[in-house]
Image 1 (cartoon, rainbow, N blue to C red):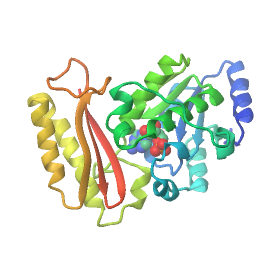
Image 2: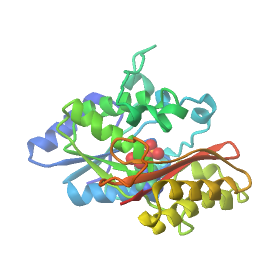
Image 3: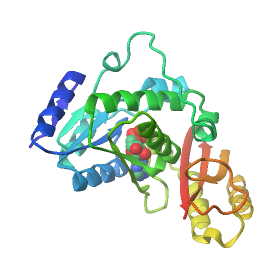
Image 4: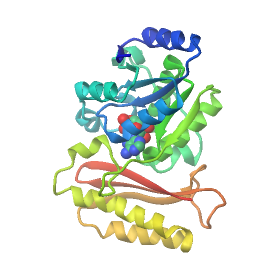
Length: 282
Ligand code: AMP
């Protein structure tokens, strides 16, 4: 089966309907393109768990709180289609902006407490309203059985789970682990913009996080957070925006180790490129 490319909601909707009427399950992998091995791992997981895999490529303008970041976001459609085809993906939905948004349309507003308003929600105002608005529209268009999201964007993943639950989408949200370069650097479309001299600076983020994950719960949460912050803040040319240790479900900061998972998250600038990464402390 070769890759079907759809630009209109009506096309992807009726193709998915036809597959579901045959009793086949649909796995959905939403992306903003500039695909790499991290995205490929989601496609692989989707093809293991579902009969048909649908990806989407849409650089969603409403989730960019910085106009220049949107302008400079890498766009590599031909290479993306080749990667999707090679990964055995069955269909891709690549809408124009006008297909997803009415002129002057505003994003919906979500308030899930610290989960929506702390960290990424605080430092990128409006970002999550943009993300949840487009994910909801994509879920309505594609109506998959399962949707796959990376732990690389941990806060986003937890918010989408919460939104799917509250909006009663009959879609299983599946989390996929972060895929890293051999250096430890979390793969990201934004890494393409790093210069050779930026690379060691960027790698220091994952290094500090992976060391913290190795240390696990041997120290108090406060000690672990402090050690990680000190490491990151000592790196030349790295500007740390936040480094936080929170309950992985609620995103409340923690003082004692919870019975649930904890997650240590970082956002930092290497030059003008903003990178995020995290590790779960089980
Ligand atoms: P994006 O194209 O950056 O919006 O990402 C699309 C999906 O791929 C999201 O669910 C991301 O969390 C996921 N993703 C991005 N980078 C990675 C990675 N390094 N490992 C695993 N998943 C990733």
